[in-house]
Image 1 (cartoon, rainbow, N blue to C red):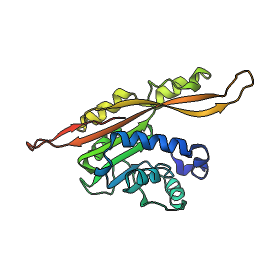
Image 2: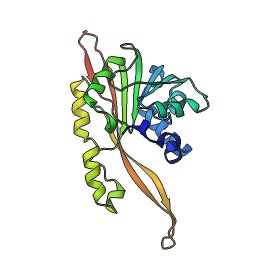
Image 3: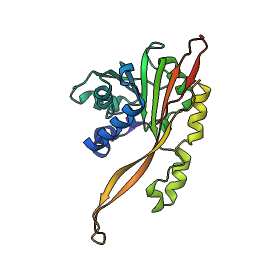
Image 4: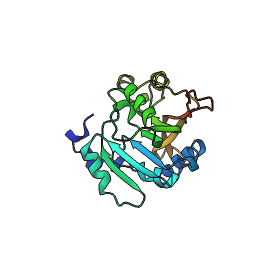
Amino acid sequence: MDYDQSGIATTYDEARALIPARRNHWRRLLSARVDRTAISLVVDLGCGTGRFSELLAAAFEAWVVGLDPSEKMIDQARRKPATTPVVFGRAAADKLPLADGRVDLVFMSQVYHHMPDPAAVARECRRLLRVGGYVCIRTGTRENDVVVSNFFPAVRAMLDADLPSGAEIRSNFQAAGFTLRHHEVVTEAVARTGLASFESPRCARIPSWRVCLTWSRPGNGRASRSWLQY
């Protein structure tokens, strides 16, 4: 989707802003799998309006570079008050304007399905990362039991056409030199109803497939890679 051909950027955060509970939730999940002491430079790849950029900077007490191909989305990100060391720029995910081996963590949130060439992005992540660096991918996959398809069956076909499978993600990153370490399906409350026929409100929940990879090099000089996925 080309966000620059629409007005979505100006209203994007109205529907997708991270409330404090969700911010804390993702911060805990990241901290559980990524060594904070090893992180000084983070790339928020496909950052959009920067809704995760500040969270990443605060969680790891690190510099964050938010990159996105959309000029309008980056413009919205830059309009937000700067409270943490975050900078934004426009770039394609497979051609990033950063030096080799300087990045500690590449983070992607709900952007993988927008990438024209995910395999090239995986190779670009490996190029950017220092030895021992991380890649974290937060995305939906075809395997997800998305609640909306229970009410609108036609949505299932759309999701199958647009979303990657978990196997596709693993294949692309394994080909780039990564191996899987951790995978977790995260269920989040996305809507609340207060129907009178129920004693308590019900929450609609959506699972999210997230991947975190680590690239390490053993002492014998041969490069090896391992995934840390969550």
